Image (spheres, rainbow, N blue to C red):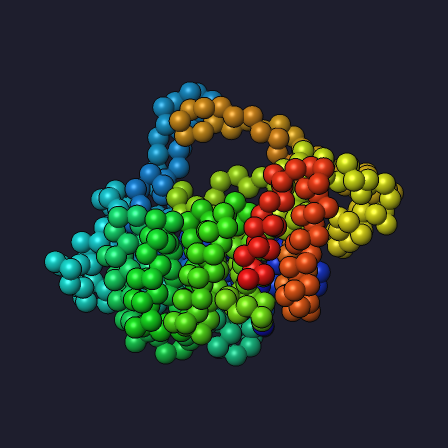
Length: 453
């Protein structure tokens, strides 16, 4: 059964993981290493309450990029001070107090890791690999239990529940020019980590640039000699709705190759196309991860997120749309004329139902999702940008609506045939494109054309 994975990025998102209304919407919690490192007691308490499988991403790739991406501007904007960049506290703690050498050297020397740290004339430095794997292992296996009090340990039960579902070997981004070196290093780290860890399976995290993906055959061939317990795939900037037909075909071909090297393959940042590929009739993936109301695709750089702008997730399009675009679609078709029409054409999740009861009409319920306040931000280059940021009420409603709809997508691939799901893509495309153009729905036709063959 396909696993539905939530990324836990900030403590403000905790409400969407806990409680009876949210607990059964997902299967696994994915934790970023920096938040685990920065607030371990809070994370330990959260996991004790959630009572879900989890894993910890050690984020070792973060330390191979230019260090500016690990910093934030601490200058006083009101005083118009010049930008002053310092390492983010969570990253600094992760490197210096949790992962240790050589990651701490990135902070001390203000210089990123490069392949020569691990390679000597193309030959792996086993002593360096061992040091890195030992520290990354301790961080993932010991961190949670060390921060739990006796009451929390009793709540969680058996000692095995303190452990992650699997550990992730140290890993690095397969960049445009040095993907061969980094792949060799990743494989060596996996092999050493696998030998060290006996408590749980060991997974290999495969973070791939689009340029490196051109060498998918070589990547699959290298992994086939290792056959990792599991693979976590992250393709840089892989926006599924924007993929051309040839790119969808290449993606599926890559997944099929990877699936031949491992028993478990998860997409760390995927949307509905990836969920479809979890269907038993396809079997390309075993699970898909995303964040709460964002995170279906993600850039490797910058490290961490920006300001996640809430959009409205239109289930029939399987896409998060800008407010103006979704308003045009639903109003043009009269989907707001009645609650019955709204439920049939837009959504009948618990969040929308609560808004019907509170607001008294479909139109008023829908309008709440678009409520916003102006926000002014200053970008790194000094440019001032004015954005419309959702109100707290709108953001919370949009997030719950999104999570209910993502859960329904997983239910659909378990309950419907693949041909039924493809027909739904085609029907939605035909209904909306006829008088609104292809801009919002072209991806449905692309997916349908590839997947039906």
